Image 1 (tube, rainbow, N blue to C red):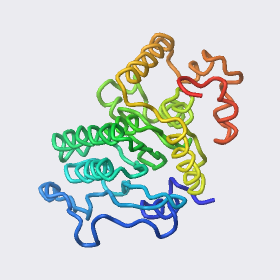
Image 2: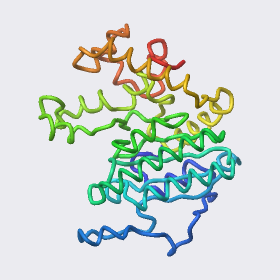
Image 3: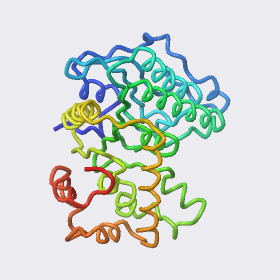
Length: 298
């Protein structure tokens, strides 16, 4: 077993996709780095912290992006976002089989706040354009930085979100919430609460992610294969009606659970027996136990 969480971006590319199949769209030494970071005495990185290119998954050619969570927490800046948007636009143009995003990001880079926010909006538009062109997008979330801020929104725009129990997905991180509303609102020191709220198991139960796998490169590879099969057999239409149904699901969640303070209360409200002990189950066993109580998706 080889941990996806502990792997580097390159190791994830090698572990999820067919061995040696990843080919970057820009060669070594030609990747553009951020021109802004020098103003803050921050060293730049080739490719601005994200690798983009093509690979094969069980022989199927897909376009791929892998964020390097070790560089500025995978945060999105102007060049980083432009590379993601360019990949998705190219996918729509080429009608590739799918785009797989290996997300590992704390959100927008504060050093390039406005440019980063604009970049995220461009990535969202490019992702939805790719889906409208018939190209499914799969988001893999299993890195130490999770998928927060703009990348959390981008993940939720994908056809399928795949997570591990160790992964996290949210709009704002616990430190951000605590800094603006105090630790009484959300205490980042309470790691169990953080994972109960933003972790993969809770997101799977609420239907925010469609596949939950073990923290293992081989499990993520199989999950990516399952996600592509799901996109082929049961494609999610990008229509106004589909978006309105999603909005109704979110509204019903707020109405049903808005007064509850802890995710374990939500699990009990869903009728899950032994809701305090089920969370400690390993991912495969948890999927079986949670299946009858999941929201939004079979």
